[in-house]
Amino acid sequence: MTPVLPRITDDERRARLGVRHRLAPSARAAHAEDAARAVLLLHATDPATVYVSTCARLARPSFAEVERALYDEKSLIRMPGMRRTVYVVPREIAHVVQRSSTDAVAVTQRRVMLQFLASGGFDEAWLDDVEAATVAALTDLGEATAMELGAVEPRLRTQIRVAIGKPYEANQGVSTRLLFTLSCEGRIVRVRPRGSWLSSQFRYAIAPELPAITKTDAKAELVRGWLASFGPGTLDDLKWWTGWTLADTRHALAAIKAVEVRLDDDSIGYVLPGDEEPITPPEPWAALLPGLDATPMGWKERDWYITPELRTQLFDRMGNIGPTVWWNGRVVGGWATRADGEIVWRALTDLEPEATKAIDAEVIRHTEWLDGACVTPRFRVPLDRELSA
Image (cartoon, rainbow, N blue to C red; front, side):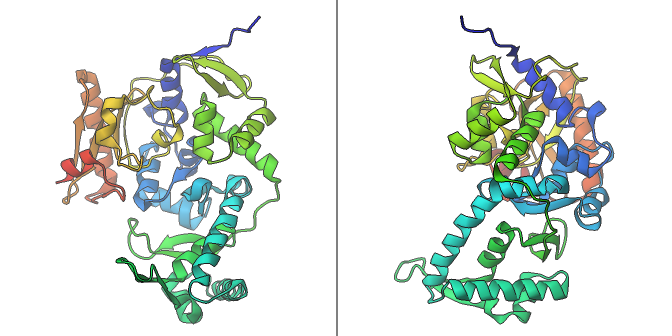
């Protein structure tokens, strides 16, 4: 006889999202580290996402609080992770991300790097030598931009001609690829950027030494953390989020003895042992989340929090989500900042007055800490372009 699985409804999933992702007012975090831990790690491809994602989850949002964690105490680390994506990671799980995911990315990245160098007549010995010289220079300098490193190690300024004979033939520099390879290998990290908080011209520093952990244990720990924040989620959700093989994903779920549950669409989801029961729902809540925020990017299957008809306005063609407006665990619209710093938003579904009032309050809260800054997402979506015009 087939056992009856515990059921977790969409309403329960939305309640968990509000509490565990620190989005309901009563659940907001006091510190940037807790805001990041709430979603396991923060997407950092767009520098602005880190600040807006964190401040959306803080009881008292501020630039200073985010920069304290990132650059003063270095309790949050910017590093490549799953699927070559750059994340901001709580320092205590950096070794988990590195061993479970980034090590494999580093192998692929190095192979691609060697193919690129070979087209310019350089070999692996040349790469090893330049990497060692770059790390040595960075050890002496403490922190440096790519340009500053190139002044010390001139080979970083090497240009290689690519796509020869094609309309898009061009020179490409070695430094960006090489520094990313070193980052994937866990040898250097990106630190405070040159310029404002919106800048992507980062300085680099030697990466902190990470605790030892096996790849198998690291995969299990990453899945444990994901389920604590995003559970219930399906096998497809987790495989997509990690970028792992189906076999690795299944093995990690088995290693932590993940519990099967039934979801509202009748699919099978997973939670941590002991996490099958409903939680106490939070008070009604609204949120403004940035493009590529970790919450909407946490699941592949999204119908339970965003209806298909909204997606054409809120996603680009590559699947990147833009800035979103949330009400009680559902995406209900989008928002943008104009050149003068004004925040504007639009509902894409009918809203009751309570929701509109709460969203307007969130607009005021974000306006105060943004203090006139204009946030332009790196990946533009149709509604963002329209609102910011």
